[in-house]
Length: 241
Image (cartoon, rainbow, N blue to C red; front, side):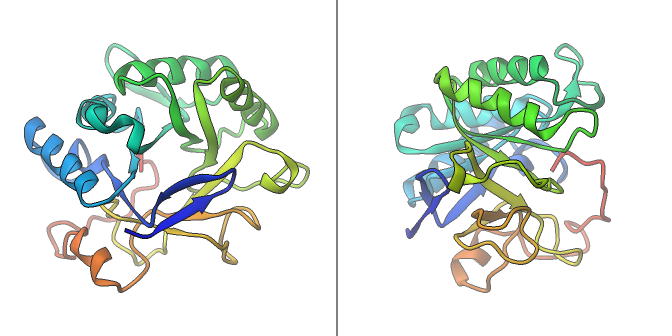
């Protein structure tokens, strides 16, 4: 498996496994043992980059990923996300939240569900218009200093305003993740990682990990479900991808 290095020196496999579909958004959740087997099979084949989020399930996908990767934890990179206001008891979503105290709460809860002592890559799932990105980045920087987080990333629709430092100026910002395009089916089974930012990248000079496969390589196709009427759904802006 080829590797890529994201900003800040985070090395990952060129193909990553997005685990969302095992728990939510594409039919019934996978059987737990089948999901664990799939994730471990990916690791056995050289995949080292695994993507999850508290919003997937909610909460259950992180638990699944944590259990599946526990035997190989030091050999893989786990990415998860904050950004939604989720009730910890019911999972009900109350909107967006990237308040500093909320980010800290989400990070601590994710660490427990993932059965780990650090989150390799933590990124903002959605932009909270009520919280300046400088406050978001500052909070994650503190978590990095505490050893709870390794790297910081921005998710779909995130844009870096002028004045916010990029990796070249000692920011913790490591990764920008974007959707391939309006016509691409929303499958997160495969995450090709690109080293160079394109014109559509959220920040110039940032590595971008695409949400869905962007290349025709056979390896990408084999990890992605075929496009059919059953598994391609209408675009939903409020879904927690």
